[in-house]
Length: 248
Image 1 (tube, rainbow, N blue to C red):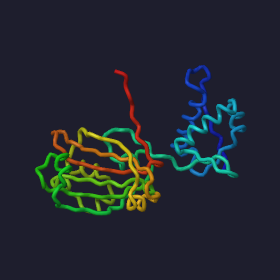
Image 2 (cartoon, rainbow, N blue to C red):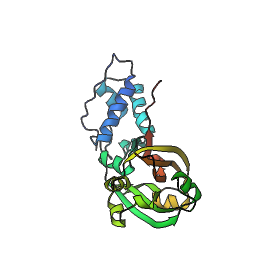
Image 3 (cartoon, rainbow, N blue to C red):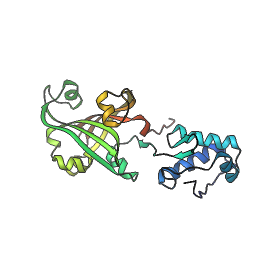
Image 4 (cartoon, helix red, strand yellow):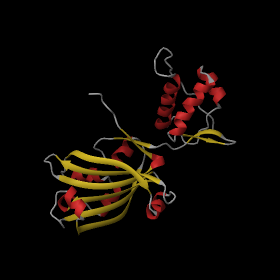
């Protein structure tokens, strides 16, 4: 399928470069589903003529979206829309919440639940528990639709994990915790990267050693008690974090 008639509004008097304005509007159309996965864009020359741009400007706009993983160039086919990254703002929400908000269909495969095990030393320290304090350990595979996206490992104090296996498979962890009266207020979070293990790669349909984004988070309730420690890994090609920076 070729590019549908997409109206763009370019402000030629703005200091914002035209390629960037166009790339942003195309990105919005892709994320909103107006340009769905599989759509084939017209060639650069046709698009440049349509939008009254030079060919280098058009090429740069397209390259912006290729670099973000929203478009792919295929020899003999042209430029196509692909399934884009999950772009997650850094705020106190769960991945399940974010996927629902973005109109994607979150699904969960519960890989293991250990309901009363001694906390490893690092986990006990993060949750402010005595050494060997009892925790519930969860390991889940989170997908967007049928496409695996993240492996999530979480440890919770026993008293905040009052939900059964079926509920965990059908709902987000934070949703269940809120329903049980846990009011999450603040979290400390660290983002990094590392290569996938063979087991992680198999679950995420990636090659062994493929780059993964990592996130560690300790979450506190409105009384200041630690209620969750999580270590998650995400497919780097399907996931990104978005941070707003403010000049003080």
